[in-house]
Image (cartoon, rainbow, N blue to C red; front, side):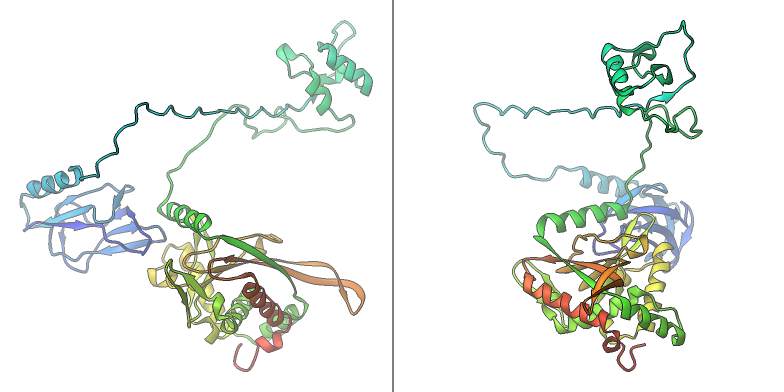
Length: 425
């Protein structure tokens, strides 16, 4: 008997899937456990294996198209079996209107739609272009105001090319002209675009989910931010020493993950989640590490991070990063975070704030290490400083709690000998 194969829910946030590639076509035999299709979810491209035995009678979507959760992916049955009645019944059920509550009685006068104000951004003022000097009998065309401004500034109008009608020199040409300088204009820029144009691409499943989840977080959780400077001189020296004996290269981010995990153990209130009618305080520490990919951002999770060595942490993070770029992360890789770290230091970002990654109560934004003048022992000397910003959900974490956590993190990173206790490399 023919059966409908439905789009499964492959992640906790998935609402629809895109069929990237079919590995079976109509008429092909299929057995349970065989690869049927590659499906792009909101976080990765995953392989869908059949749970049915039979012949593929119908494919519900073309490659590159999306199917909602529980929508028709395919129909499998006996070879030559008539599946149209089953398909028609399914489509009829989907199209049937759902009962809705009675609408309130209309008011005596329908409200008028609010007026929409459309504001056009002014076009950028064109840059005056130097041109060959005009001949004595070829007087420059210019507005009276432009002539007066040019006279006041001592600008030779013959050196300008006007941007007004028919090449007329106007006020903006005088204001933008800088004597003694040369500004590359469209005439000299081989790749310049001189007409309006644009391109559009469909929003990926990942980008849709990022937009939805972060919008919910930003507009639901009352964010506040705590920023702190951390002296990185000691950690820089410690990292150099560690990398001389470690089996893999340890990054600054790996030290930060380890320090955050140790700090969370001392401040369990930060390792928590808001669940509307209750607050969950997690005994385990799972650190989400934000990884940039082509379509957006993924947050694989280092589980039980406080119990792992720096070598174990760096091995996991590097593995996650590669899997994320290859779109091979699995749901088990990105679920279960209790705290998240977003590090943009490698992109020369000095300081930023991050949006909390649900269900966490906090996220740490890490900037780059910058050499600046610092005061040590009453003397100004060069030092290496890193800024970190903790975004907190005020429903769960109060300012004093977040501040104490940051002070513990600062102490660990500035005194790495404590962090590198026996067996932590």
